[in-house]
Amino acid sequence: MGVSTFRAKFVPLSQLDRIEKIFVVRRNPGPKIPKVEYIVLPGICKLSIFHLIVSPIILTYYTVKKKADIILTYHFIPYLLFGFFASKMTKKPHIFCQTGSICQHYIERKCLRRITKSLLNSLSAFNVPGMQTLEYWVNHGINTDKIRVLHSTIDTEKFSSRDVEKKFDFIYIGELGSHKRVDKIITAFSQIVKSGTEASLAIVGTGKDEDQLKTLVRSLQVENSVEFFGYQKDVVEFLVLAKIFVMFSKAEGLPVALMEAMSTELLVIAPDVNNIPGMLKNNVSGYLVESGNFQELFEKMNYALTNYHNLNHLRKNAREEIVTNHSYGVAVRKWEMLFARLT
Image (tube, rainbow, N blue to C red; front, side, top):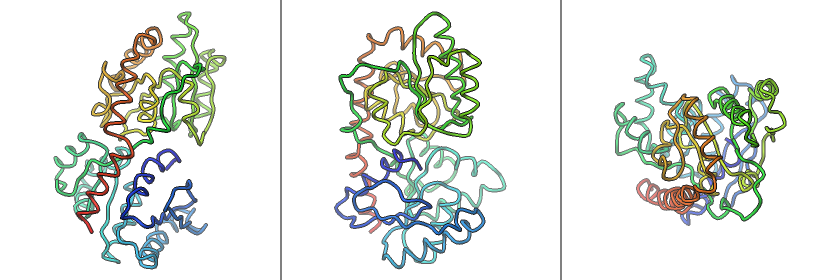
């Protein structure tokens, strides 16, 4: 879990008056957040086999030692399983929070359907990114009473627009993996440049496809217009310098990077997958692109750049959506109601 995503999930939790301490068991320390204390797993857990065996035991041990009231896990495999084990051993409530959409694949596999359904229905609470995901799980037999729409939220004071000169026409922030389709973004961008339009693209993030993407940039002869910045701890410093945020993923839960861009009043382009359409309204707060439709991606990017100064209303609407429905204050209220029910 990256720094931005981690903060988006744990800062609201730390703001609850009822919470005295949050103990986070993970392989490496995370960002400094009030009330958060990190319990770093031993080095042996870097090996997968030992991670699977040792980590749930450590989680159980510290649940007892620290007198934790609730077990909270993210990511289906393996952490839901770790939380399930610790919950059974300690009799503490277990809340699982879905990230991304990968965990939905398990219930679609016949051989894993029954165990996936059983695990999710054993939870004290199941937090999902949006209404589309909630409906999906209900349709697959998960108890409606357990499910809450409660996901990452944004520090809307930090992620806000600044009156500075824009350095980048387009920006992508996120993992550089095949499922993110960053190659399609680069290709569409190259067509804009080759049409005679001067433009720039910033790519912030790392991943296994980074070298391939750099090779693609060179082959398309746009290396003077595309800049790779690698992993950045504080992405707001890049967002405020950009005009248009673009993503084209195959699947998403409710991406933090998109919410941060909307809050910073960038003009946004995103795929109409999973829970994104529930947050981003096409032609109202940005542009949705049909999943996998490269031609539409190119057309929306080209239109957004050409008409950028006439689309300020979309940018204002985008920020309003995040402030109203996806800010820290919203998450604090939802967590408060959930904990009041469980404790």
